[in-house]
Length: 278
Image (cartoon, rainbow, N blue to C red; front, side, top):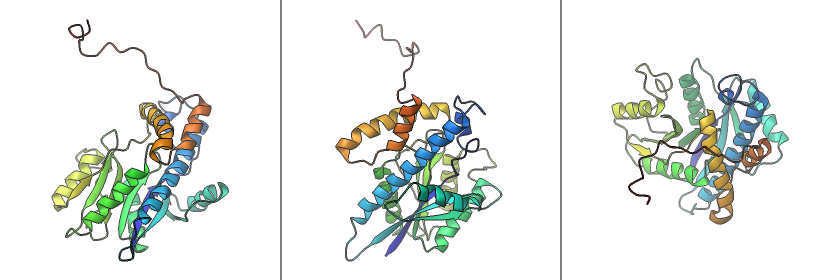
């Protein structure tokens, strides 16, 4: 039996403490309560999508080889673990159990390393980690991530998998138990590298293989939100035809906010077309 952990980093959806770049506290337009409610929907959607991916992955198990998948939600500070558990229990029954842990440290790098170590201590063989602000995540993204990790288990010294986001960072990162790797110097890089090239630099220096996964956008800024609104609409429509698990909570929240459509003014900055359009 191989134990696969999906490590989901999430803050509590508290007004003024999550998605503040979408709010009037910074450079956004929403009240803090609206942004935190939207994040709440994203968090639950991501969890449901991951659990649906687990079902598909476990359906491939055979008598000779079996994988089990566990969703671990890591939050901080430690006193928020009980509150996070209550958030999920108040929502009703979930298709699978969820493990809740607290990550600790003096920087995000340290928090990330601490959460990974706690999962290794729980006998994880592979860890695939991500944030909860990705309403455009699909079951195929999760499946592809774990399949890539399983390929690396047969590689001496292991390796990493990573999916970029839309702003020079990563949305998904993971590696196998035998991989000597960590997050130190990635989110706080002394050379000023952004997160994606920092991970690649670390992998290159350690001479570790890395597998590139399809990009998955997250939501930090208003521009990110606009992009994700279009993706959420498409995913919810296409779900009836492609069997995907859609981000329906986020779609409903955007609809209630009156933000389920994105329209833009004409753009005159395109390449000249006078010689084509006749």
